[in-house]
Image (cartoon, rainbow, N blue to C red; front, side, top):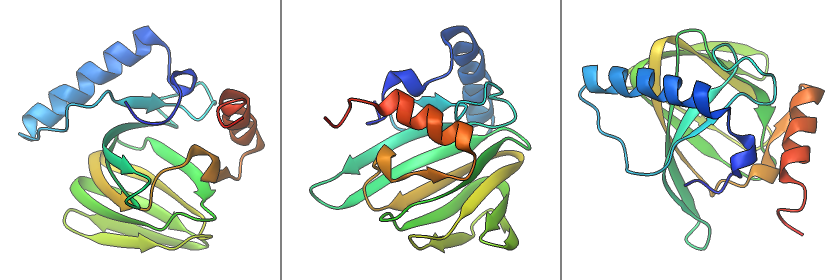
Length: 165
């Protein structure tokens, strides 16, 4: 399981259906992901199919200084605008493609392309068709996510309260 608390996950019924659809697509692509418990989040907005993502953690090695995870999104499903103060991350598109917002730029990433994102750069992404990317980064710390939408920041803080006390 990722280091993100279960309170950030979408509801069980929606989760089961979404995972079934995701695994069907991965099977069509002949892709096998790590045997970790996937994280499905809607960023507190209650519309997972529009704003959300699936995370499949490979490793989040804080002491060693690295993290690897797959992120899957539906067509047009987006991860909202945010930045990290500490984390540097690199995206590699495995399948599909992504519309990426990076600060004030709009980019399109296709299969096989990479994008490095330095700390402080505001970014978001949305799938072009069902899409899968690999993120290689510094360790993932949920408290190092700064979302532009106040409702998402409130959701994150509400669900992480007490985790690091």
